Image (cartoon, rainbow, N blue to C red; front, top):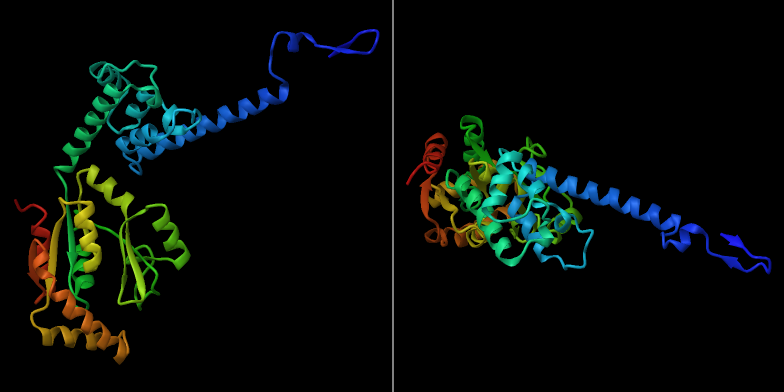
Length: 314
């Protein structure tokens, strides 16, 4: 800034050219760096399977057009495609040519017809992988042995991925956090619900909450893996709604007397709690016809084998 003889300020060369003040340029530079980092985070999530490419594209298209710094909207289509495992630059260019999308296009700038074509291509690619996989949901009444059967499958059938549920109850003797369950606080469970991180969740026995983190399930199915959920009746119903292709399996006791014996014999609940769980078990047993397949748990190894066979059954 310079001054004249009467001390009135005059604009300097930069101001006369319309250049932004130094503070604005610095802010713009910081914003650009933050945007690049945000896009890199999105690409990394796609690359390691934490997010599906279709979910990223849909997030971009749901965002208002004036959200110019939105990571998904500002991500180039080509960068999204090359983030997908198995797709290199040449394949990405070929796909974009087929879909008539310019190489420089960002997700937010893709037209309606191109959005539809890209969404169809991403969905078809994901569907091809998922046709090789299957989601089996194992449920049944309390004390029927769901945990024991699941543990046997985990130990003897490594080809089956067992989902780890989150729960607000305390660990039982021998249970390990991250292996048998994710033991979380009520506040953390509330956060997972709020941020839609759970495929299903329910309050069981009018006390504790259980839920299934969804991202690992989607990732495994997209990779063509066999996935099993061991959950309660309420959760199985939610999965049926969210994932209609899932196969629901109901684990039955050999008899009601055997179920009572197992519940009392494990000694993990006091008498009032045992009675409450038995009343719940009667209600749960009445829902068995809602399931696709019934397996009787007379012998753990046999029951586990029947469940595993369902992954490859027609």
